Image (cartoon, rainbow, N blue to C red; front, top):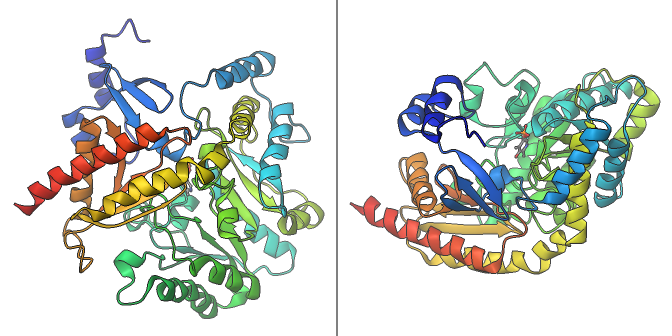
Amino acid sequence: MNTHVAQSNLGAIDAAHHLHPFTDMKKLNAAGTRIIQRAEGVHVFDNHGKRYLDAFAGLWCVNIGYGRKEIADAVYRQMNELPYYNTFFGTTTEPTILLAEKITAHAGPHLNHVFFAGSGSEANDTWFRMARVYWKALGHPTKTTVISRKNGYHGSTVAGASLGGMKWMHEQGNLPIPGIAHINQPYWYAEGGDLSPAEFGLKIARELEEKIDELGEENVAAFVAEPIQGAGGVIVPPETYWPEIARICKERNILLVADEVICGFGRLGSWFGHQHYGIEPDLCPVAKGLSSGYLPIGGVLVSDRVADVMINEVGDFFHGFTYSGHPVCAAAALENLRIIEEEKLVERVRDDIGPYFAKAWGSLADHDMVGETVSVGLMAGLQLAKDKKTRQRYAKPDDIGTMVRNVCVENGVILRATGDRMLASPPLTITEEDVDLMVSTLRKGLDKIWAEAKD
Ligand SMILES: *Cc1c(COP(=O)(O)O)cnc(C)c1O
Protein backbone atom coordinates (compact mmCIF):
# COMPACT_ATOMS: atom_id res chain seq x y z
CA MET A 1 0.00 0.00 0.00
CA ASN A 2 0.96 3.62 -0.46
CA THR A 3 3.98 2.80 -2.54
CA HIS A 4 3.81 6.27 -4.04
CA VAL A 5 4.01 7.95 -0.64
CA ALA A 6 7.24 7.69 1.30
CA GLN A 7 6.38 6.08 4.64
CA SER A 8 8.21 8.83 6.49
CA ASN A 9 5.80 11.39 5.04
CA LEU A 10 2.60 9.72 6.17
CA GLY A 11 2.84 10.99 9.73
CA ALA A 12 3.32 14.55 8.53
CA ILE A 13 0.35 14.29 6.19
CA ASP A 14 -1.77 12.90 9.02
CA ALA A 15 -0.78 15.77 11.29
CA ALA A 16 -1.59 18.26 8.53
CA HIS A 17 -5.00 16.94 7.57
CA HIS A 18 -6.57 14.48 10.00
CA LEU A 19 -8.40 15.29 13.23
CA HIS A 20 -8.51 12.06 15.28
CA PRO A 21 -11.41 11.10 17.55
CA PHE A 22 -10.89 11.17 21.33
CA THR A 23 -7.39 12.55 20.83
CA ASP A 24 -5.46 15.60 22.03
CA MET A 25 -4.24 16.64 18.59
CA LYS A 26 -1.50 18.95 19.79
CA LYS A 27 0.05 16.17 21.85
CA LEU A 28 -0.42 13.61 19.08
CA ASN A 29 1.17 15.79 16.44
CA ALA A 30 4.16 16.34 18.71
CA ALA A 31 4.54 12.63 19.50
CA GLY A 32 3.61 11.33 16.05
CA THR A 33 0.86 8.88 15.25
CA ARG A 34 1.28 5.12 15.01
CA ILE A 35 0.32 3.82 11.60
CA ILE A 36 -1.05 0.29 11.55
CA GLN A 37 -0.48 -1.31 8.20
CA ARG A 38 -1.59 -4.91 8.30
CA ALA A 39 -2.84 -7.59 10.62
CA GLU A 40 -3.07 -11.35 10.99
CA GLY A 41 -4.80 -13.38 13.67
CA VAL A 42 -4.37 -11.56 16.98
CA HIS A 43 -1.46 -9.45 15.73
CA VAL A 44 -1.24 -6.04 14.09
CA PHE A 45 1.87 -4.63 12.40
CA ASP A 46 2.84 -0.98 12.13
CA ASN A 47 4.44 0.61 9.09
CA HIS A 48 7.91 -0.08 10.48
CA GLY A 49 7.10 -3.77 10.59
CA LYS A 50 6.84 -3.91 14.38
CA ARG A 51 4.43 -6.60 15.57
CA TYR A 52 1.95 -6.11 18.43
CA LEU A 53 -0.30 -8.57 20.20
CA ASP A 54 -3.65 -6.80 20.00
CA ALA A 55 -5.11 -7.66 23.39
CA PHE A 56 -7.84 -5.11 22.78
CA ALA A 57 -9.28 -6.51 19.52
CA GLY A 58 -9.08 -3.12 17.82
CA LEU A 59 -11.72 -1.34 19.89
CA TRP A 60 -13.40 -4.32 21.58
CA CYS A 61 -14.62 -5.50 18.20
CA VAL A 62 -12.37 -7.88 16.23
CA ASN A 63 -13.86 -10.94 17.91
CA ILE A 64 -12.79 -13.45 15.25
CA GLY A 65 -9.31 -11.99 14.82
CA TYR A 66 -7.77 -10.40 11.74
CA GLY A 67 -7.09 -11.70 8.25
CA ARG A 68 -10.21 -13.80 7.65
CA LYS A 69 -10.24 -14.33 3.93
CA GLU A 70 -13.78 -15.74 4.10
CA ILE A 71 -15.08 -12.31 5.03
CA ALA A 72 -13.10 -10.59 2.32
CA ASP A 73 -14.53 -13.08 -0.18
CA ALA A 74 -18.11 -12.65 1.04
CA VAL A 75 -17.75 -8.88 0.80
CA TYR A 76 -16.22 -9.11 -2.68
CA ARG A 77 -19.06 -11.32 -3.89
CA GLN A 78 -21.72 -9.01 -2.47
CA MET A 79 -19.96 -5.92 -3.84
CA ASN A 80 -20.11 -7.38 -7.33
CA GLU A 81 -23.67 -8.56 -7.06
CA LEU A 82 -25.24 -5.59 -5.30
CA PRO A 83 -23.00 -3.00 -3.62
CA TYR A 84 -25.87 -1.02 -2.17
CA TYR A 85 -29.57 -0.84 -1.89
CA ASN A 86 -31.71 0.64 0.85
CA THR A 87 -34.26 -0.83 3.23
CA PHE A 88 -36.65 2.13 3.13
CA PHE A 89 -39.98 2.30 1.30
CA GLY A 90 -40.79 -1.36 1.01
CA THR A 91 -37.51 -2.89 -0.12
CA THR A 92 -34.66 -4.87 1.39
CA THR A 93 -31.82 -7.16 0.34
CA GLU A 94 -31.04 -10.82 0.88
CA PRO A 95 -28.09 -10.48 3.28
CA THR A 96 -30.09 -8.05 5.40
CA ILE A 97 -32.96 -10.50 5.70
CA LEU A 98 -30.69 -13.40 6.58
CA LEU A 99 -28.69 -11.37 9.07
CA ALA A 100 -31.80 -10.32 11.00
CA GLU A 101 -32.78 -13.97 11.22
CA LYS A 102 -29.35 -15.10 12.36
CA ILE A 103 -28.87 -12.43 15.03
CA THR A 104 -32.24 -13.06 16.61
CA ALA A 105 -31.69 -16.84 16.55
CA HIS A 106 -28.92 -16.35 19.13
CA ALA A 107 -30.57 -13.73 21.35
CA GLY A 108 -33.09 -14.39 24.13
CA PRO A 109 -36.27 -16.10 22.84
CA HIS A 110 -38.31 -12.91 23.30
CA LEU A 111 -36.01 -10.93 20.96
CA ASN A 112 -37.16 -11.60 17.40
CA HIS A 113 -36.71 -8.36 15.46
CA VAL A 114 -33.78 -6.16 14.46
CA PHE A 115 -33.71 -2.50 13.43
CA PHE A 116 -30.44 -1.91 11.57
CA ALA A 117 -28.08 1.03 12.00
CA GLY A 118 -24.53 1.84 10.99
CA SER A 119 -22.88 1.90 14.41
CA GLY A 120 -23.38 1.51 18.14
CA SER A 121 -24.10 5.21 18.54
CA GLU A 122 -26.79 5.10 15.88
CA ALA A 123 -28.22 2.01 17.53
CA ASN A 124 -28.52 3.93 20.80
CA ASP A 125 -30.14 6.89 19.06
CA THR A 126 -32.56 4.43 17.50
CA TRP A 127 -33.88 2.78 20.65
CA PHE A 128 -33.96 6.15 22.43
CA ARG A 129 -36.55 7.37 19.92
CA MET A 130 -38.26 3.99 19.70
CA ALA A 131 -38.84 3.78 23.46
CA ARG A 132 -40.64 7.11 23.47
CA VAL A 133 -42.67 6.22 20.39
CA TYR A 134 -43.62 2.94 22.06
CA TRP A 135 -45.00 4.57 25.18
CA LYS A 136 -46.82 7.26 23.24
CA ALA A 137 -48.51 4.64 21.10
CA LEU A 138 -49.70 2.92 24.28
CA GLY A 139 -51.26 6.15 25.50
CA HIS A 140 -48.44 7.23 27.83
CA PRO A 141 -47.01 10.30 26.08
CA THR A 142 -45.33 11.55 29.26
CA LYS A 143 -43.17 8.43 29.63
CA THR A 144 -40.13 9.98 27.95
CA THR A 145 -37.27 10.22 30.44
CA VAL A 146 -34.48 7.68 30.23
CA ILE A 147 -32.42 6.76 33.27
CA SER A 148 -28.82 5.79 32.61
CA ARG A 149 -25.62 5.62 34.63
CA LYS A 150 -22.67 7.78 35.48
CA ASN A 151 -19.56 6.49 33.71
CA GLY A 152 -21.64 4.44 31.28
CA TYR A 153 -20.79 4.57 27.58
CA HIS A 154 -23.39 4.55 24.80
CA GLY A 155 -21.57 6.22 21.94
CA SER A 156 -20.66 9.67 20.77
CA THR A 157 -23.65 11.10 18.91
CA VAL A 158 -25.73 13.70 20.75
CA ALA A 159 -28.11 11.11 22.18
CA GLY A 160 -25.37 8.52 22.71
CA ALA A 161 -23.08 10.88 24.58
CA SER A 162 -26.03 12.18 26.60
CA LEU A 163 -27.09 8.67 27.59
CA GLY A 164 -23.50 7.97 28.52
CA GLY A 165 -22.32 9.22 31.86
CA MET A 166 -18.93 10.65 30.92
CA LYS A 167 -18.79 14.10 32.49
CA TRP A 168 -15.93 15.22 30.31
CA MET A 169 -18.00 14.39 27.23
CA HIS A 170 -21.02 16.27 28.58
CA GLU A 171 -18.90 19.34 29.12
CA GLN A 172 -18.26 19.56 25.38
CA GLY A 173 -21.41 20.57 23.52
CA ASN A 174 -23.86 21.31 26.34
CA LEU A 175 -24.87 17.75 27.06
CA PRO A 176 -26.79 15.86 28.21
CA ILE A 177 -29.90 16.76 26.24
CA PRO A 178 -33.08 17.08 28.34
CA GLY A 179 -34.94 13.94 29.35
CA ILE A 180 -32.02 11.90 30.62
CA ALA A 181 -31.19 11.29 34.30
CA HIS A 182 -28.07 9.56 35.59
CA ILE A 183 -27.69 7.34 38.64
CA ASN A 184 -24.56 5.84 40.18
CA GLN A 185 -22.63 2.91 38.71
CA PRO A 186 -21.99 -0.39 40.51
CA TYR A 187 -18.26 0.31 40.89
CA TRP A 188 -17.61 -1.31 44.23
CA TYR A 189 -13.83 -0.86 44.34
CA ALA A 190 -13.99 2.92 44.08
CA GLU A 191 -17.36 3.74 45.54
CA GLY A 192 -18.36 0.80 47.73
CA GLY A 193 -16.92 2.15 50.98
CA ASP A 194 -17.41 -0.28 53.86
CA LEU A 195 -20.24 -2.20 52.24
CA SER A 196 -19.70 -5.71 50.96
CA PRO A 197 -19.95 -5.99 47.16
CA ALA A 198 -23.31 -7.76 47.53
CA GLU A 199 -24.73 -5.01 49.76
CA PHE A 200 -23.35 -2.33 47.48
CA GLY A 201 -24.83 -3.96 44.37
CA LEU A 202 -28.30 -3.87 45.94
CA LYS A 203 -27.91 -0.31 47.17
CA ILE A 204 -26.86 0.98 43.76
CA ALA A 205 -29.59 -0.97 41.94
CA ARG A 206 -32.16 0.56 44.30
CA GLU A 207 -31.06 4.03 43.21
CA LEU A 208 -33.03 3.20 40.09
CA GLU A 209 -36.18 2.80 42.16
CA GLU A 210 -35.49 6.04 44.03
CA LYS A 211 -34.93 7.90 40.76
CA ILE A 212 -38.19 6.52 39.33
CA ASP A 213 -40.01 7.74 42.45
CA GLU A 214 -38.38 11.13 42.18
CA LEU A 215 -39.25 11.55 38.49
CA GLY A 216 -42.63 9.82 38.71
CA GLU A 217 -43.16 6.44 37.10
CA GLU A 218 -45.50 8.05 34.57
CA ASN A 219 -42.56 10.06 33.21
CA VAL A 220 -39.95 7.31 32.84
CA ALA A 221 -39.56 5.43 29.56
CA ALA A 222 -36.55 3.22 30.11
CA PHE A 223 -33.38 2.34 31.97
CA VAL A 224 -30.23 1.65 29.96
CA ALA A 225 -26.98 0.01 31.01
CA GLU A 226 -24.20 -2.09 29.61
CA PRO A 227 -24.30 -5.61 31.12
CA ILE A 228 -20.67 -4.89 32.01
CA GLN A 229 -19.46 -1.30 31.56
CA GLY A 230 -16.72 -1.36 28.96
CA ALA A 231 -15.23 2.05 28.25
CA GLY A 232 -15.93 3.05 31.86
CA GLY A 233 -13.26 0.56 32.94
CA VAL A 234 -14.70 -2.97 32.71
CA ILE A 235 -16.80 -2.50 35.82
CA VAL A 236 -18.22 -5.93 36.63
CA PRO A 237 -21.30 -5.39 38.79
CA PRO A 238 -21.76 -7.38 42.01
CA GLU A 239 -23.93 -10.48 41.51
CA THR A 240 -26.81 -8.82 43.35
CA TYR A 241 -27.06 -5.93 40.90
CA TRP A 242 -28.73 -7.21 37.73
CA PRO A 243 -31.50 -9.30 39.35
CA GLU A 244 -32.53 -6.25 41.37
CA ILE A 245 -32.45 -3.97 38.31
CA ALA A 246 -34.57 -6.47 36.38
CA ARG A 247 -37.07 -6.67 39.26
CA ILE A 248 -37.42 -2.88 39.44
CA CYS A 249 -37.89 -2.44 35.68
CA LYS A 250 -40.59 -5.09 35.67
CA GLU A 251 -42.45 -3.84 38.74
CA ARG A 252 -42.30 -0.21 37.71
CA ASN A 253 -43.17 -0.86 34.10
CA ILE A 254 -40.19 0.77 32.42
CA LEU A 255 -38.29 -0.66 29.47
CA LEU A 256 -34.98 -2.35 30.22
CA VAL A 257 -32.31 -1.63 27.63
CA ALA A 258 -29.11 -3.69 27.67
CA ASP A 259 -26.39 -2.04 25.60
CA GLU A 260 -24.78 -5.15 24.12
CA VAL A 261 -22.37 -3.31 21.82
CA ILE A 262 -19.37 -4.88 23.60
CA CYS A 263 -20.91 -7.77 25.53
CA GLY A 264 -22.70 -9.21 22.49
CA PHE A 265 -21.34 -11.88 20.14
CA GLY A 266 -19.36 -14.03 22.49
CA ARG A 267 -17.19 -11.74 24.55
CA LEU A 268 -18.60 -12.96 27.88
CA GLY A 269 -18.77 -16.61 26.88
CA SER A 270 -22.45 -16.26 25.96
CA TRP A 271 -23.95 -14.93 22.76
CA PHE A 272 -25.18 -11.87 24.64
CA GLY A 273 -24.56 -10.26 28.00
CA HIS A 274 -28.25 -10.50 28.94
CA GLN A 275 -27.95 -14.28 28.74
CA HIS A 276 -24.91 -14.26 31.00
CA TYR A 277 -26.88 -12.34 33.62
CA GLY A 278 -30.19 -14.12 33.00
CA ILE A 279 -32.15 -10.94 32.27
CA GLU A 280 -34.74 -10.21 29.58
CA PRO A 281 -34.14 -6.76 28.15
CA ASP A 282 -36.75 -5.11 25.95
CA LEU A 283 -34.20 -3.51 23.63
CA CYS A 284 -30.52 -4.24 22.91
CA PRO A 285 -28.29 -2.00 20.84
CA VAL A 286 -25.52 -4.03 19.14
CA ALA A 287 -22.53 -3.27 16.88
CA LYS A 288 -18.77 -4.02 17.22
CA GLY A 289 -18.58 -7.84 17.36
CA LEU A 290 -21.57 -8.10 15.01
CA SER A 291 -19.15 -7.77 12.10
CA SER A 292 -15.94 -8.13 14.13
CA GLY A 293 -15.24 -4.61 12.87
CA TYR A 294 -14.60 -5.76 9.29
CA LEU A 295 -17.26 -3.31 8.13
CA PRO A 296 -19.38 -0.86 10.12
CA ILE A 297 -22.80 -2.13 11.11
CA GLY A 298 -25.04 -1.93 14.17
CA GLY A 299 -28.63 -2.47 15.12
CA VAL A 300 -31.18 -2.78 17.88
CA LEU A 301 -32.66 -6.10 18.94
CA VAL A 302 -36.33 -5.45 19.62
CA SER A 303 -38.42 -7.64 21.92
CA ASP A 304 -41.82 -8.99 20.96
CA ARG A 305 -43.39 -6.60 23.48
CA VAL A 306 -41.99 -3.53 21.70
CA ALA A 307 -42.07 -4.91 18.15
CA ASP A 308 -45.76 -5.72 18.47
CA VAL A 309 -46.55 -2.10 19.29
CA MET A 310 -44.21 -0.73 16.61
CA ILE A 311 -45.81 -2.98 13.99
CA ASN A 312 -49.46 -2.90 15.03
CA GLU A 313 -49.92 0.47 16.73
CA VAL A 314 -47.29 2.94 15.57
CA GLY A 315 -47.39 2.42 11.84
CA ASP A 316 -44.64 4.46 10.25
CA PHE A 317 -41.56 4.96 12.46
CA PHE A 318 -39.93 8.00 10.91
CA HIS A 319 -36.40 6.88 11.59
CA GLY A 320 -33.59 5.13 9.75
CA PHE A 321 -30.27 5.60 8.05
CA THR A 322 -29.24 5.50 4.42
CA TYR A 323 -27.04 2.55 5.37
CA SER A 324 -29.51 0.73 7.65
CA GLY A 325 -29.04 -2.93 6.75
CA HIS A 326 -26.35 -2.16 4.12
CA PRO A 327 -26.06 -5.35 2.03
CA VAL A 328 -22.26 -5.49 1.98
CA CYS A 329 -21.94 -4.84 5.71
CA ALA A 330 -24.67 -7.40 6.31
CA ALA A 331 -22.78 -9.93 4.17
CA ALA A 332 -19.65 -9.34 6.26
CA ALA A 333 -21.64 -9.72 9.49
CA LEU A 334 -23.32 -12.90 8.27
CA GLU A 335 -19.97 -14.46 7.47
CA ASN A 336 -18.60 -13.31 10.81
CA LEU A 337 -21.47 -14.97 12.68
CA ARG A 338 -21.05 -18.10 10.60
CA ILE A 339 -17.40 -18.27 11.67
CA ILE A 340 -18.32 -17.72 15.34
CA GLU A 341 -20.80 -20.59 15.06
CA GLU A 342 -18.60 -22.93 13.08
CA GLU A 343 -15.54 -22.48 15.27
CA LYS A 344 -17.70 -22.57 18.40
CA LEU A 345 -16.02 -19.40 19.65
CA VAL A 346 -18.73 -18.66 22.20
CA GLU A 347 -18.30 -22.11 23.74
CA ARG A 348 -14.53 -21.71 23.52
CA VAL A 349 -14.70 -18.54 25.61
CA ARG A 350 -17.10 -20.09 28.10
CA ASP A 351 -15.41 -23.46 28.61
CA ASP A 352 -11.84 -23.18 27.49
CA ILE A 353 -9.93 -19.96 26.88
CA GLY A 354 -12.16 -17.89 29.18
CA PRO A 355 -11.37 -19.92 32.31
CA TYR A 356 -7.69 -20.04 31.30
CA PHE A 357 -7.66 -16.28 30.82
CA ALA A 358 -9.41 -15.71 34.16
CA LYS A 359 -6.71 -17.64 35.98
CA ALA A 360 -3.85 -15.89 34.18
CA TRP A 361 -5.35 -12.41 34.57
CA GLY A 362 -6.26 -13.14 38.19
CA SER A 363 -2.65 -14.08 38.92
CA LEU A 364 -1.80 -10.37 38.70
CA ALA A 365 -3.82 -9.73 41.86
CA ASP A 366 -0.75 -10.50 43.97
CA HIS A 367 1.12 -7.52 42.56
CA ASP A 368 1.69 -4.63 44.99
CA MET A 369 0.23 -2.17 42.52
CA VAL A 370 -2.95 -4.12 41.81
CA GLY A 371 -6.10 -3.41 43.82
CA GLU A 372 -8.36 -5.92 42.09
CA THR A 373 -8.60 -8.01 38.95
CA VAL A 374 -11.94 -8.84 37.35
CA SER A 375 -12.89 -10.71 34.22
CA VAL A 376 -15.86 -12.35 32.58
CA GLY A 377 -15.09 -14.37 29.49
CA LEU A 378 -12.53 -12.33 27.57
CA MET A 379 -13.38 -8.93 29.04
CA ALA A 380 -11.10 -7.90 31.86
CA GLY A 381 -10.23 -5.03 34.16
CA LEU A 382 -7.36 -4.47 36.54
CA GLN A 383 -7.48 -1.73 39.16
CA LEU A 384 -4.23 0.09 39.86
CA ALA A 385 -3.85 1.04 43.51
CA LYS A 386 -1.39 3.11 45.46
CA ASP A 387 -2.17 1.15 48.61
CA LYS A 388 -4.03 -2.05 47.98
CA LYS A 389 -4.88 -2.64 51.65
CA THR A 390 -6.85 0.59 51.98
CA ARG A 391 -8.03 0.70 48.33
CA GLN A 392 -6.24 4.04 48.02
CA ARG A 393 -5.93 5.24 44.42
CA TYR A 394 -3.34 7.41 42.72
CA ALA A 395 -3.92 11.16 42.78
CA LYS A 396 -3.67 11.35 38.99
CA PRO A 397 -5.42 8.17 37.80
CA ASP A 398 -5.20 9.01 34.08
CA ASP A 399 -1.44 9.45 34.22
CA ILE A 400 -0.70 6.22 36.03
CA GLY A 401 -2.86 4.15 33.68
CA THR A 402 -1.33 5.74 30.62
CA MET A 403 2.18 5.05 31.94
CA VAL A 404 1.50 1.34 32.37
CA ARG A 405 -0.27 1.19 29.00
CA ASN A 406 2.65 2.84 27.22
CA VAL A 407 5.19 0.38 28.62
CA CYS A 408 3.02 -2.53 27.47
CA VAL A 409 2.66 -1.09 23.97
CA GLU A 410 6.41 -0.47 23.77
CA ASN A 411 6.86 -4.11 24.70
CA GLY A 412 4.54 -5.22 21.92
CA VAL A 413 1.22 -5.74 23.70
CA ILE A 414 -1.71 -3.41 23.06
CA LEU A 415 -3.85 -2.96 26.17
CA ARG A 416 -5.99 -0.01 27.08
CA ALA A 417 -6.11 2.18 30.17
CA THR A 418 -9.24 3.95 31.39
CA GLY A 419 -8.10 6.18 34.22
CA ASP A 420 -6.39 3.88 36.70
CA ARG A 421 -7.84 0.67 35.30
CA MET A 422 -6.08 -1.51 32.74
CA LEU A 423 -8.43 -3.18 30.29
CA ALA A 424 -8.13 -6.23 28.08
CA SER A 425 -10.54 -7.52 25.46
CA PRO A 426 -8.63 -9.78 23.07
CA PRO A 427 -9.97 -11.59 20.01
CA LEU A 428 -11.93 -14.70 21.01
CA THR A 429 -9.36 -16.72 19.06
CA ILE A 430 -6.41 -15.83 21.30
CA THR A 431 -4.21 -18.80 22.28
CA GLU A 432 -3.06 -19.77 25.77
CA GLU A 433 0.51 -18.81 24.84
CA ASP A 434 -0.61 -15.32 23.84
CA VAL A 435 -2.64 -14.96 27.03
CA ASP A 436 0.53 -15.81 28.97
CA LEU A 437 2.55 -13.32 26.94
CA MET A 438 -0.04 -10.61 27.53
CA VAL A 439 -0.09 -11.22 31.28
CA SER A 440 3.70 -11.41 31.65
CA THR A 441 4.12 -8.21 29.62
CA LEU A 442 1.57 -6.44 31.79
CA ARG A 443 3.36 -7.69 34.91
CA LYS A 444 6.63 -6.29 33.60
CA GLY A 445 4.93 -2.96 32.96
CA LEU A 446 3.49 -2.94 36.48
CA ASP A 447 6.93 -3.70 37.95
CA LYS A 448 8.48 -0.83 36.06
CA ILE A 449 5.87 1.81 36.87
CA TRP A 450 5.52 0.63 40.49
CA ALA A 451 9.26 1.15 40.96
CA GLU A 452 9.14 4.56 39.27
CA ALA A 453 6.00 5.76 41.03
CA LYS A 454 7.50 5.03 44.43
CA ASP A 455 10.18 7.65 43.78
C1 LIG B 1 -18.49 1.44 21.37
C2 LIG B 1 -19.79 1.52 22.10
C3 LIG B 1 -20.88 2.25 21.60
C4 LIG B 1 -20.76 3.12 20.39
O1 LIG B 1 -20.52 2.41 19.23
P1 LIG B 1 -19.92 3.18 17.94
O2 LIG B 1 -19.94 2.12 16.89
O3 LIG B 1 -18.56 3.67 18.31
O4 LIG B 1 -20.85 4.29 17.64
C5 LIG B 1 -22.08 2.18 22.27
N1 LIG B 1 -22.21 1.45 23.39
C6 LIG B 1 -21.20 0.75 23.91
C7 LIG B 1 -21.41 -0.07 25.13
C8 LIG B 1 -19.94 0.78 23.30
O5 LIG B 1 -18.93 0.13 23.83
